[in-house]
Length: 336
Image 1: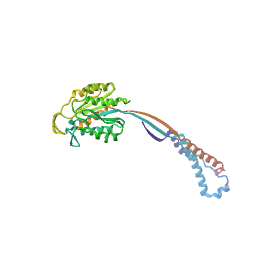
Image 2: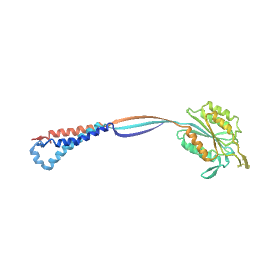
Image 3: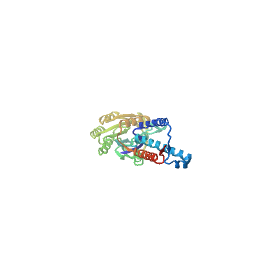
Image 4: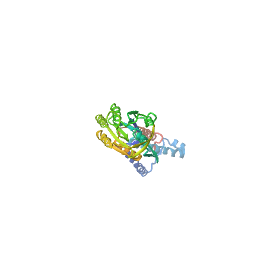
């Protein structure tokens, strides 16, 4: 949860300023009311001693005091106030585990990054890194798997952790024994997510092969995830064909195989979706689609408070009004 605060100065009744339009009219009526024929001083003796400049200033002060009083009064009627708007924003993110295949076949260089050849794992890490950046309120974990699953990073909201040496950086081919244990990977990810209280729990499974290791079948693992209300998105990466990969025993020819039917069935059982990525841009579009489907719930509570300021111009209007009245009875008193 976080807060947004905004303070705005405004007037509750700005139409009150239309009263200023009456001031020229009042001045006009006063000018037509006839000659004053009076001395605006309490004593003729004082008047003669002040001289013409002081007499002019006294009349100016009287007029200024009256107009300032009226201006402050109208400003008070307009009700100046400071509006304090506070938003309490709480976001309910997704608990998500990225299960990434690190078997030897992920060495095949049939992807590109910045117009340079890249292997499947390099492309997968690049796209998942961008995906992690876009999921600002999610807890994300990283699970690498080949012949068995390995938790590379527990669920966390720290993007630095996920991208650092304890996250994506350590995900590499050969970190666990070779093979493709899809069922075991799903079960391990589901076990981690089962401990969470989030409303939305997701596994994104990225692989380029056929399940050939582990004791649990992929479909049984998918059914287990379904009972735990976990959705699974499956992504098959790579292209069909024969490839040569480097192994500890030297170059080895590899024929690419995909069990698309099983991956489709996994997604169907666990209320997810199956995707096929044959290049980097396709993989980016897939993760963009997943990003759209897994929206974060945002709840906003807005509180608005008004701090009234009308008493300040009202007080000023009273002061200037009193000065005008006192001046009329003393310094500016009229004598015929």
